[in-house]
Image (cartoon, rainbow, N blue to C red):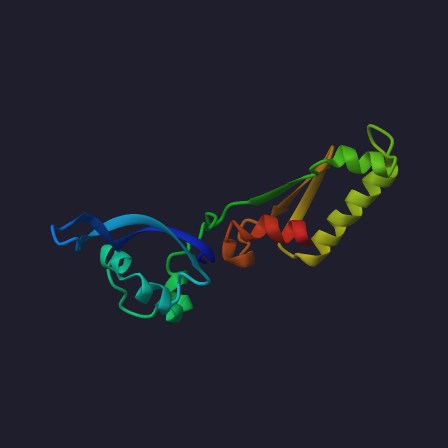
Amino acid sequence: MFRQGSCILKKKVEDIVKYSEDGIPVKRLRRKVIDINSKNIASRSFWNENPSLLEELGSFTQDVDKIKPDYIRSFLFENKLMPSTWIVIRIDGCHFHRFSEVHEFTKPNDEQALKLMNSCAVTVLEEFEDVKFSYGVSDEYSFVLKKNSQLYQRRARLFPMTFLLF
């Protein structure tokens, strides 16, 4: 969640602003930009070592190492698809021309390539009951799920990832 490594911040440091007539340095607290190397800025020790930063940002009510996962999840944005609508997932064959060259497919429609894409689509239809129809054109395939599908509770971000990885 947090970057581990260097941290740039303003820290209160004692700075000599002048010398008194006796030659004694007169010091004042000044804010200087510093670079801190820290293994974990989410640890209590980091914040204890940098109290001026803690003052500016406000204190923590609980140790940041002990933040509950449910609390973090409450901030996640779930983009759910509208109910009772068809879900169409389109998968585009990125850099398919390179794949075609490597496997020496003939253009425009190599029989071997079409069989490969179609067998992948058949497998998807067999694996996912909610997929009712698939359609392939060029280097892309679209999959249509039934209107009342509750696959992944209709969370939009899970569909492309699942179909691509399958």
